[in-house]
Amino acid sequence: MQEFQVGRPFPLPRVEEEGAVFSVEPYTMMLIYRYQRPTEEEIAEFTNGKVELAVADMRGVLLFLSKIGSLNWADAAYSTHLTDRKKVLPDLEEGQGYSLDAFLVDCVDNTLAAHRLIRMNTRFSRELRGMLEDEEKRPFDPQAFERQVADIFRAYRPKDLAKFARLTMRG
Image (cartoon, rainbow, N blue to C red):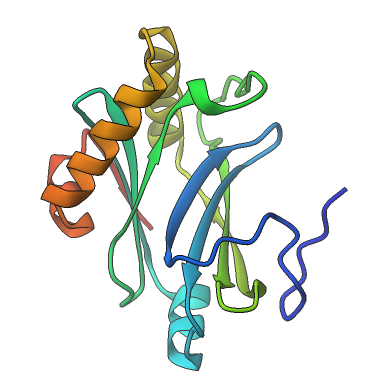
C-alpha cells in the first residue's frame, strides 16, 4: 500500500517536468500537479483555493482540465486504453459523487508538497463516467493518440482548452 505524506517522498515514479497528470485508480481518481519548487503561496492556493474542473473531448482525446485557486489552469490528457487494468466506477445515488485525490509534488526532489481531497458532485461524476465509458469503446492507436496530444498541447494553452469543455464543475 502506498503512503502519501506531505513533506515526504512522493511514492509514485519521479517525473522531472512540470505539468499535470490525471488517472483513474481502483478506489479514487488522482490529479497530480508537478511544480518546480512550489512556493508557500502556491501550496496555500492548492490546499485552500476554490476548484474548477472541466473535461473536453477534442480530436478523440479526453482532456481533464483543472484550476485551483489562483494557480494557472492545468491540462492532462487521459485515455482508458493506456491503463493496465480496467477500472469500474461504482453507480452513484443522487447526492453522491466521486472523489479526486489531488497532489502537489515538487518535481525537483519528488517531495509531496500538498494533498487535498476534492469531492465531485453527482452530475459531474455521472457525466465523467459516461465520457470515460464512451472513450473506452472507441478504437485506439497509441501513436495516433500521442500525436494528437502533442498537436493539441502545441496549439492551445490549458485555459483555452477549458473553453471547449463539455463538462464543468466549480466548487
